[in-house]
Image 1 (cartoon, rainbow, N blue to C red):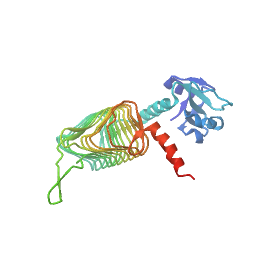
Image 2: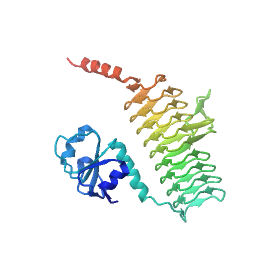
Image 3: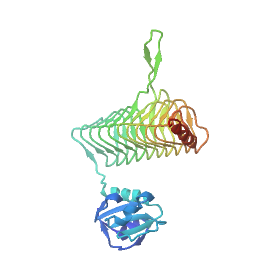
Image 4: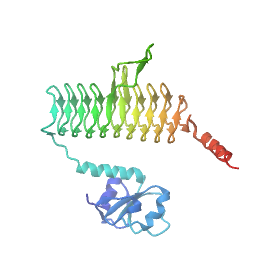
Length: 329
């Protein structure tokens, strides 16, 4: 890529302070910015890097008031963090090319319906009556089972496994080795001490604009559907059990898990290693700090929790201050 400051300002609807012809060819973190790079500054604790950064362009918030001279050209925007995400999207879209390709060593069953300019890599398998939308990319070694429906502009990275009957919306990204649609962990105890497997006859429905991280598992339901609502973002190494519903625009960081039949509301945030027990309901806009373990439903929207068992964040911090002192002599 190669951009001038005035082009970037136009793309981001920003204003320039400095040289409008400053040219960049790469992105860099502000702490390691070098000539020819563009960086962004949004977190106040990184302000000292702004003054010694060698990058040619820095994207900053409109409210930023430098305390020292800044050698880089600054582009002021409403939200620096969101603007760099938008710029990365723009650059990626310019690089992306949509072309029809089917690897000679792939296998697409004759009854499958494949849309326009779909990429199917070598050793990928597309099952009977599967339907793949326009401009979707199915990378190498992907398994797509019978009767799967995948929307348009999706990206399925190498090694992903999508079991038969799953439904995936538009612009969904599924990273390597994710498994969509495995049986849930359902077993009935018998009198002789053994366990009888409960067959799972449902599926997984992933709505539009969802991203599923690498090595994440989303189990299909016993009956009905496990549902990931529109705009949800699931990190690597997460576990979503059978009959769970994840609300719109909810985010889950790595190694988090939601047990069976729990319903998580919209715009919730789960930091790393959060665990939510089964058959619960979580209200909208609920946040969980890292390693929180939730064992009862959350009915009031907008609350934050920490600890195991989970308690409100400020209650936890007050409790922590007390038991931290308890061990001191």
